[in-house]
Image (cartoon, rainbow, N blue to C red; front, side):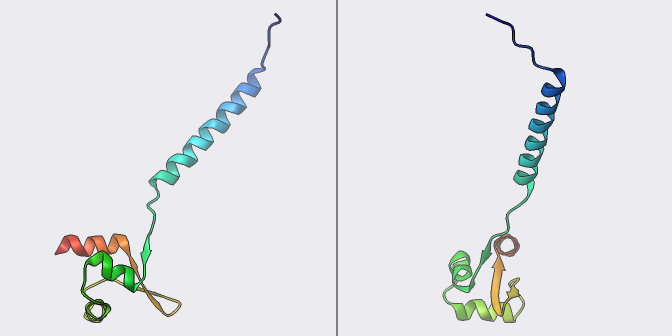
Length: 86
């Protein structure tokens, strides 16, 4: 059988591509996903009795909220922080 010769420049460029892909994958893993909950989901997540209870807590500024397109949305990470505070 004949010997296959692969140029060093090819090996170097393939290695560089692999390293770039590995770096991109690491960055994606380090980026924390933001999960948004609507009011119904937040009530369930926080184990509240009703949406009215949730809205009262929002009105009292006890629970962090965001408004997007006229809708109240809740960041799950922020809700976790709220739960940890007690």
